[in-house]
Length: 232
Image 1 (cartoon, rainbow, N blue to C red):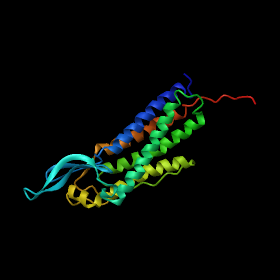
Image 2: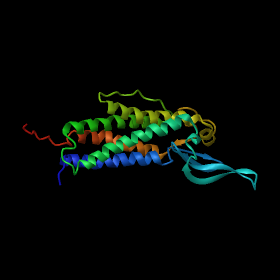
Image 3: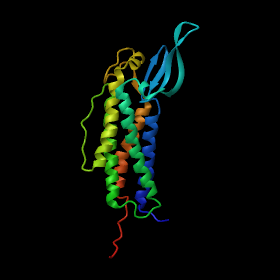
Image 4: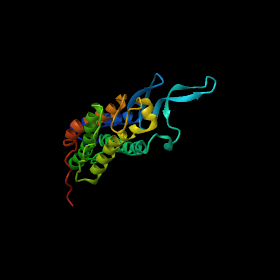
């Protein structure tokens, strides 16, 4: 079967897909932020939540429904920052997945990825990974300070870095919403976790991006075969 990738390129394609899948799973799961309310564990994603309070008419009190699901509408997401975060992080993960699927296609399509195209794809993965991994380290300390945005020469690289970086930086801006404050002991605020903790899904997203940055970027430099020169 014809392929435009070297043996190293095949490894890069498979690893890129695993990294993209990990980041996408982390984005979808509602375990970015952990807290408690009415004695029950509560978790949030960007557009999903697990456990929510409802008023029990028979007992005339608030009780927790221990179920996970997305918000009933886009406007139901607790804050405007989380709504924007959902859009930009979703687009960023989508671009990571697009690069990975293109790399997988190159395993069986000749002349799809040259060495130059492979290096550009690696640059996209690098800038996407830098933003997530840097923000993850700052979130782990219980407070958050957004990092400066790196700028590359390629327009696609800038879009990728800005999308994922903006999503990670915007998420803590929603910690002052009423829903989050109820879960975090009414002491949380923007860039302040209060009594809450960052969940594994955020780190899952960051781990996929960090692996793409550290390994996929390097492998991408050796992924494409030299293009044949055709006489005209």
